[in-house]
Length: 236
Length: 315
Image (cartoon, rainbow over all chains, first blue to last red; front, top):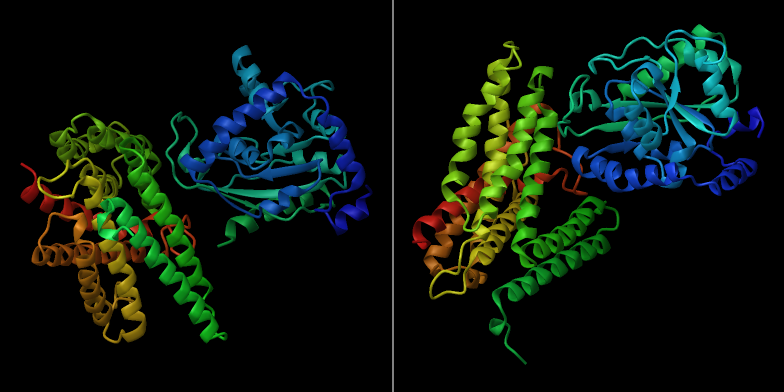
């Protein structure tokens, strides 16, 4: 699939891409199955019955892999709720980008998050050529996976969105033509704020914007990403 | 052919509700045919939702006591969720809110005990939660907005958890001597009369409504709707007297009490919505809005009906 095609119809499923998914579907690891079971039996019912998740613009997630899903970040519920929107068979294609220093702090957490959420751990400090975050994300996308990333870099208070870091723009610059899907999450930080372990079942909402191709300098791309999420935030 | 009056009260009631729904669906179809220019899609959606609500409610009431309890607990949980989401809570209220939601299963647990623990049921939220909630908030060490948070959270718990849970307790009432009435039939009577009164008030108001009762709170509520709706619901209640131990006069009195209480519940929830600046509490029921938009009148009618029956008909 070439870039022009994508730009015109970002939601259209290209033949080669769907064949690519079909080929990958054959290799189902135990880890994939555990993740699918976990989402089918725990996360999806939890989102429907406890959180009462409302979704607007779900059709934009039909975008063919790979794409880059970006969203505001205020809670551990963010990743869970976004992943819960995908059909089970697509889950293993979606890699949430996560800080290695937090999610790989010990073996238990590491195995758990890799299995259940299929995270793509990236380094925040001591960056070398080998563990360069941009390189890691790029490799995932080249392998045909989509990534989910929170450009604020960390969970905010949930009141106001933090400034976006430039990392995602770096990635987009290196991989022009990959579709960006913006999302805005409402009330997640109220339900499960930073530092809390028991969620309060406030109704939460996910608003998903249309897939888009971004071009320009890094600051321009970062601005455009912020604007895309803000636009969803302003929606009534 | 067996006469309908020989059937069990539950089956008889099921057939009756089925009849009402068929009439409603036919009426909507006729309206659509008669006035093709007008849009009746919302009305049609409402009637469709009534079919589903009636089916779910009947299943929940008839199948087993456990299921009924779970159903009512879920109803309280959902109503509380809708209310709390619209509140302006502070980050410091997190732990108090966890406690608030924890109170839902606990309140229903008292009802689920064998025999139900009435004493605890009737004071757990009004007394113990009233005392415990602010203490949990004190531990969060934030005093700004303390009274506001403590009051509004407990108020919601009283109406949506304590109030609604009376229906679940009513369900456990044993058969009343010398009658066919028991907890289940009484819940059916309460819900049918109150919901029919809501619908009839709407219909009377839409067709004849001129004089507004409380324009500042709810512009749709008129004297014509109020009087017409309550009077016709009272008449209808005579038709399902077989669900109750009441005489004709008493049926009229009781249905007057619960429909007026139901009206008050609707008016109070309208004021709450006004305060929050929303039209509906949610979107879980197509055409109706949120759970609270449907059970608002029951929040008020259930405790009134419960205590009437308990005072006059249990030991």
